[in-house]
Image (tube, rainbow, N blue to C red):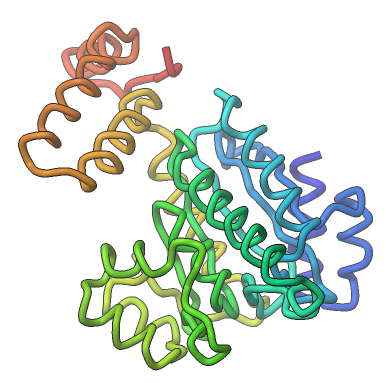
Length: 293
């Protein structure tokens, strides 16, 4: 099923008219995850497919994203997650303004609270996550990418926290994650102006880890993200997960507290079979074979 899904997604990226077939293959879901196979074993993809609304964050979309993240959280076979879009030229266009217009103040406030919770759930997944941004990532769409550990953007991508142009401010974590990533001054400039930047500009300020020149199929960031994921997959899964936890928690506290968090996480890897395998492989001058135990 994983290889079939990948072929369908590739075909859709090349031929936008096939998007209905892709949606059908996903069981009509707007958000779906699949395990990749073969050379990409150990990688799972979260695929967003809401073409009629440019993957905007509607109620059903958000509910399905929650369920997808919850399923992945307990899947020990997954070593890396790639978040991508099946809609050409779009990663996620942000809030569903048509739905939002029908909400009263209380409903809108609750929904944004739920969005904030979703981004926190994505951020707290135990395995590394990579956002493959091959198109527009605006407002909540960029906040979704910010909730991932790593970001790859195509040169043609457009990224921006545009909420101030709609009379709002970033409400799903953007006002907190962006300054921590690019610095307070740059973040203020981007949020105050609502400016959209391309992949090269995003890389230059550290918003994304890498930029890939867009290709004819429109999936350059996705392909680069897969290569990055393949670099992570062979590493010891428990060590990678503990390293992620140590960094995510440590950056929130002072250095002394961070060192204590590091020590606790380090203690979790000492008794693992993977640590012993790593030491043995070094002595025997061979590649280690990690099992996540």
